[in-house]
Amino acid sequence: GNSVTQMEGPVTLSEEAFLTINCTYTATGYPSLFWYVQYPGEGLQLLLKATKADDKGSNKGFEATYRKETTSFHLEKGSVQVSDSAVYFCALIRSGGGADGLTFGKGTHLIIQP
Amino acid sequence: DVKVTQSSRYLVKRTGEKVFLECVQDMDHENMFWYRQDPGLGLRLIYFSYDVKMKEKGDIPEGYSVSREKKERFSLILESASTNQTSMYLCASSLRDSRVYGYTFGSGTRLTVV
Image (cartoon, rainbow over all chains, first blue to last red; front, side):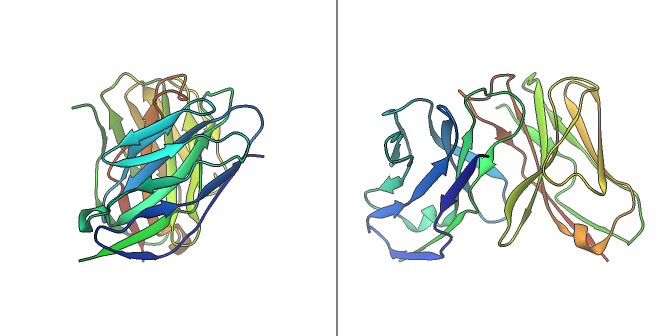
């Protein structure tokens, strides 16, 4: 079946540090890949997405590239801010799309210190 | 701004009560979903629906049922609440082909069963 693996953390960084959160997946075919962010007490918000190999998703300074050869979708940001503190979820939807649910990683708790 | 609205942010219910969690979306999405989120377990799919009056079991449907009488509304029902159903519940919706735009989530309902 489909699965997503990501570091759980917490990951603690200083403001302006470089961020990488690793995400690897197992799925048949060519899934669509997503990063969602959850701020304290809130639901999940879509951060970025990629629907085919070598696509790069980007938003709010965050980037991730769909790497089919390494089955990865690592999230990066060049200079993090305190306001980026949140839980980040990597997720996939299988090739057929449809209504059978996103498959999520367990989430990475990111803490940015001033 | 399009959104998914969950009727309550916080609920406290007694063991054995019948509990209704309501979710409404204003995006004319075909698909709707209920997840629960627990520390260390991530997000798990309870039920989903791809059309009015249609429903499919997710990964953990035991102890739950759902109702979708109108396209915009998807209700989660706990037939007899138990303490192990204390959790954060997240509703989401998507277009029929969810691969391109992913899902839109509500803000969540934190349910405590005492």
